Length: 393
Ligand SMILES: [Zn+2]
Image (cartoon, rainbow, N blue to C red):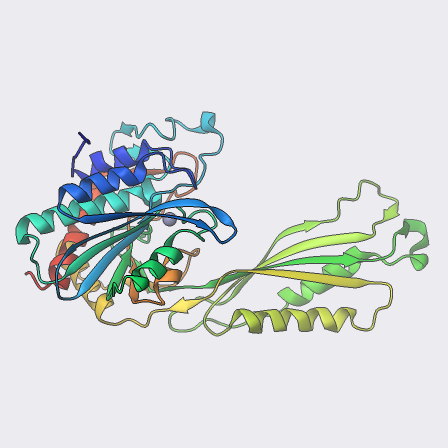
């Protein structure tokens, strides 16, 4: 008999105790499935393989009948804990100390899934199964990894099954100083460039017979950093350029090296496309290297996410209203597009999607934790969103 407990603290602990480091599941999806089944959800475990990636377990669960279709989306996988001996409490022990619950995945994002389930239980208890619409859970075991056999394939599957979702809430940690003070309505895109400059090796005393690739690469990089690409707009921060690596690997102080390498990461807003960024970078490279004979620059790129924006619509209105009703605060939540990428980027092609979750403080860190009181507040907000969405007030 599975252990069923809808208290969001107990439920978060049950999830954290599963060592679900991508792509291992370690029972995490079963915890979700058992709870939803006990509420009457129709659960479909979905295991996807292929497309050049590892096998991933996922879950689609649904309840209700005709009417608007709302979905909660999230992931049960977590990033590795790093050096376990650096943790104050073991990363998968889900230890509570004073007002905090510690563990890998507490913030990102098992607590949010626990609050989804806890709010759903309250909602169904009040309204029964015929609440005038459909409620689904889209849960993947691969958001932190390659994300190939996860959410994108669940969404393709829903389409094949003729399941039409109208609105979706992704439970990533978005809040800032209080729960619900910030939601995300889009994300910047992310692209990496890998640069290798090849010069001519030689003695540092005979620079005229060599070509130092470091000199060219530093010139290229300062050119790239010289001027901001834009100033941002109503919904987006300015496009940001970072140079995370610069490597020559030359052990000798008297040798001009043959190669110099650097990586450039660009987080771009919706004023650009991946193609326009690639073109912009290629022009910079061309301007320095096109007339050189002995020096060349090789550029490879990898697009990790495209930028997207969900113009605030019905869902964001319902969410703002629900946050102020549940918390008693009157300020509108900030509609933001900062931070890293999330699975919302796959869902936005199917329906309006917004991200709202617990406070963003310690995700991916040693000693990741959440405040216990935040779980109650987030559950109340999710509950109120369901009430307002299905007009049950
Ligand atoms: Zn996450």
